[in-house]
Length: 449
Ligand code: ATP
Image 1: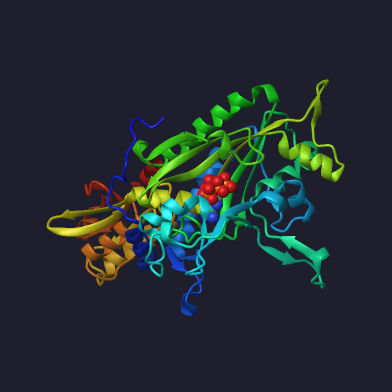
Image 2: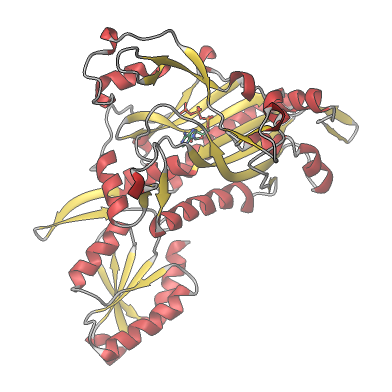
């Protein structure tokens, strides 16, 4: 559906540059850093937490708050292990892996091509074709753990690899306690865990990640129409929050790519600096899950009401917070030269920006200015995420806010003391408006929408 198909990411971002900014400015740190890290795992610092929270808030707003037909859920991470038997994960949630007998490294058989075009571990200098590879073997991606005092086969449990199953097993609880009727959805945000083998590209593929999933239950004859609806809705969500049209495309899965549960799936793909990759999947899961759980648990999961009785079909938009955050960061990252000085700027949508406004007294040592600035800051922080900064030269303070994506900066100067006006600086255009200090809060609230 994208108007044109780009070969390459358009913009200043590379994964390395985005990762470096994230670390330098306190968004993302390698996990357990002082012990050498842990593959495909990251910790989020202050601004990363705020950014992820904003991504989740926008998802909740569009999927729950602004709709009448979707309710929320927060299910447990460790479910009864029978759930994963019934869902098919114990048998089929696996990647085909091959080992190289020479270097002992392990690769996903379906991603050798990706690895052989330069992203391969440097330990292995030869071509894959020279490689001494084993036949592919299925490797289950679920993390196992034990529940209770005994460590035996009967106490094996799994960290959930998706949040969806927690929704299906609550179908009866929700339909009997909430006033819902198909078409309706159940939405959930929560951690999922996968023992991924392919090394990640920064946040793109992690071993623990938050998913934002919604299962939308519909009468079976309406499933295709609802599938198209949700592909379209989700595509618009990414665009409305600032991703470039040319960096998004929709790709329908070929029959042989479909997961065991899916009747049809379309991926919303984003052109990351590493190429086109799945950002979000929108699947038509049919009645597979409700039927599997009905059979395995003995509890009938169907819709009964208004003289009708049927097993609904399920449409599922599923995305992780990190893939979304990484796409927003890559799209927003920019470098430019202004008045012969280079600046790096994150042009994040104001609703996503970790800090909405910085309040800066022009001269940090001027008592009148700092007092006015602090009082404006106290007022603003009640409604939005704000920062006060009086250290260093003003240019340096602006550059720091540009790098963390703060859309507006308010500067308090001599004129403020004289006539009660301040300058409002726009991150993207660098335009400065002179406005009354009393009107700042309302103006920003209006601009945030
Ligand atoms: P892939 O083919 O990239 O492994 P998948 O098709 O297995 O992904 P789904 O099971 O459809 O992914 O998961 C739904 C969404 O969860 C994906 O669209 C993606 O946004 C996110 N996701 C899946 N695996 C990971 C991961 N390891 N790290 C971060 N996000 C992930």
